[in-house]
Length: 428
View 1 (cartoon, helix red, strand yellow):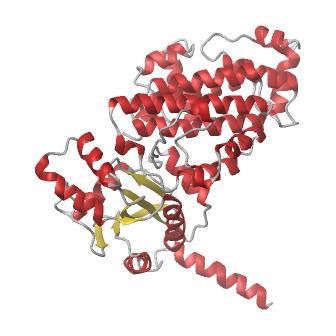
View 2 (view 1 turned 180 degrees about the vertical axis):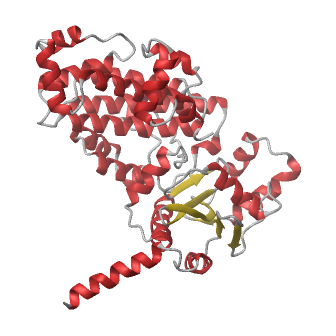
View 3 (view 1 turned 90 degrees about the horizontal axis):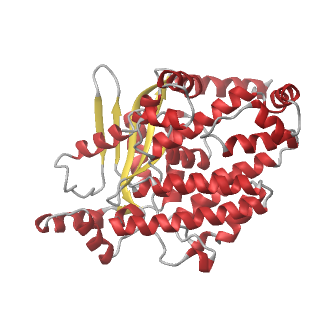
């Protein structure tokens, strides 16, 4: 009976928090500030907006005479966020951004930061100033600003996100939830390239060796252990200086070459783990094509993470015993021919089954009809092209064999919930 009453009491506490009489947001932010010794800002999204921030010697920002403008710019970059993320700029700044939810709606936003991932070197200062074309008379201001930022490594900032989210929303998340959300929102942490060749070392140099060798990551790909791989990637990028900060046209080409090498190595590991070799090769070519179409360092780096995780996902899927070989062969064929017409007759030849029986087996094993599965895979590919290329929407639909733009928009909205244009503009 006592235990039952205790449970009811806990439920009541959570209910109180979720309702309008939740602990005062100003008090919680002040507590976070005093505990973490980081700048903390909040803005309530109400009929009468309210904002405030606390700071311990926060350095003056060279581009914003009013500190509130800096935080408003961060909010604008993630105005549709519904989950905590880590956001980084290409000027060494990182922020933990936590949407505050009350009664199922976003009621406020809390920002912790700015901080920097590590203390930069004088050489990095010089490179940053040159890459961004900062005039001579502003350089001392920027150097002073960077030196004044508190150093918080990326893994610690992810955990700060978790703790702050628990205090503000009473919502228990895993560090990988924040990691994935940050990555998917295209605000994921950028990394510093290590200057060594991948083929010679069998090592993808965007990852930090001290947190586990690349061989361990490749083994996780072979075993299809996506969750463990994501944790390894989160650790591997922790503490690295942002690649975006070292940007230049020549550097972009160099990072692309490194990315292509890393994707190639990952594809081999996936094939060794049991993924169909032709599919692994097709995946490799597809991811490399996406990389080549990009002109933004942060997108290249995020795409590499996506490619590595994709290989692990495909290996895991190929190991599922509830999918028959005939269905697996059909799925592989569909993926490799997304840009071509695919007929049931072709799939029947690939699987060795008659079209009618293959359709029934495919529905039983996957939950999708063949037609719906093909459409779904094409929409997933369309998302990649919308994210990573500037191709016209009509051209993307045509390349993926939709017979006209209206048809493409209709099918895209069916699977993505928004139109292709809305999807492309969501983070712009």
